[in-house]
Image (cartoon, rainbow, N blue to C red; front, side, top):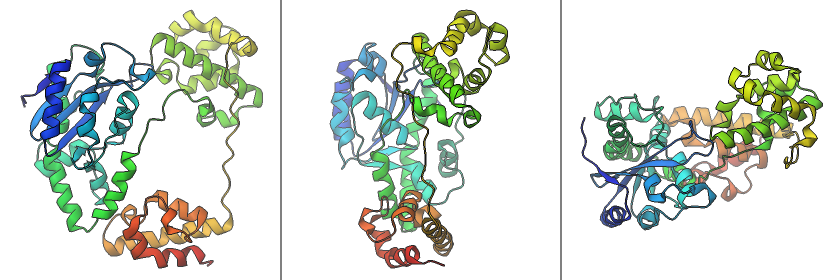
Length: 384
């Protein structure tokens, strides 16, 4: 469907948009990034439904090619006040990523959010993706042709822009339906607790030296092989940054582990480990030299220690079993999801610490503490 919207790519148009957002009763928002195509992703498109008026904001034009990851960029400062206004509802779907990336790139902390995906999850809807929720509420079946697009490229195809604007076009109707369903199910406070947690989401991406311990097959490597894997992991990051490619697409983890295992001596070994021919030709010698003489690589970060998660003791295991069994039974009694009864984060905190201080339990909330406080204390004390 051909949907009219305004393209925002200049400071003058952004100023007018800011005024419209300040006067609007609500704002629906979504973002598109280019994480599958570059080393450092960025927000490339922002879709807005401002009380019925549709806008597409081009952050790349507004930042004039500058790198927002070096520090939060001020290009969207005119939109900060309405986006951070708790009294002005912000409608999102699966908004954790949008909240985190807007804070990362522009220092904007979205407040007053309603997340329709979280509401659908809390209500126990089997399918909570945006397309499924829109179809269930409105009967409209959305296209999926542009889910893998590179939103950092310009110009953006008109069909892709129409696809993007649909992400906020139906959000008001979907959100109104879900708000009513949440109220009918008496889950308003439980939803509010979850929405507060989403508002606090922040970006934790970037290079992580400790990721070597999470690579499939790494647990089978010897100490020397793990150090080789670490060197390869660091070198891959440098090469990915140089070529502006996602590190995992440049050389995937499976190949890194294979290289660390084989410790290749020639290009044939590199290819047998799964390294693509172009990388063998351009960087094969570099990779083999790094494995043979890692001390010659400058500015390596410290080798990350092996994670040693603490094994829960018998008392903690019993608390968890008690809490999970009770949560399942209570969710069936109330005909709500187990998460609505007790969020997993709260359950794991109670497992570790017990229920003596319910005010400290994350994502519990006053309503759950009032309804279930005595039962939670009993379950956490129970030994059998």
